[in-house]
Amino acid sequence: MPMPTTDLSKRSTIYFESELHQALRLKAAHSHRSLSDLVNDAVRQSLREDQDDLASFEQRLAEPTMSYEALLNNLKANGKL
Image (cartoon, rainbow, N blue to C red; front, side, top):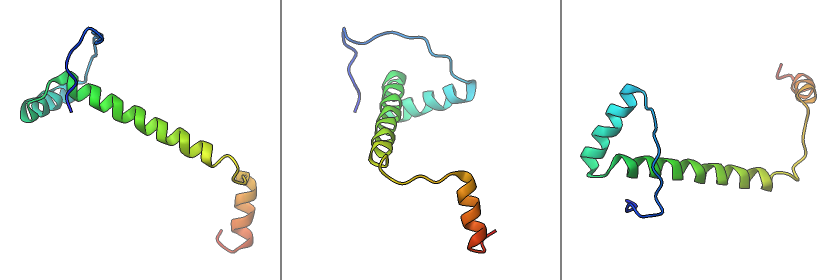
């Protein structure tokens, strides 16, 4: 969903690799959206994924932990190494 440019929008310069810029321009033309809309959506999606990851980490804080050494010893003891 495109976000209209408003007084709250900030201008920034972003340097893309040539191939990424070409792909982004083609996608923008194909989807009838601006480069800014596509980049804003991608950044929002990345931030949502970060938020989801942080929530998952928070939920797993109470889980027991095992050191790498203990994991290897356990695998060896169970005949998996």
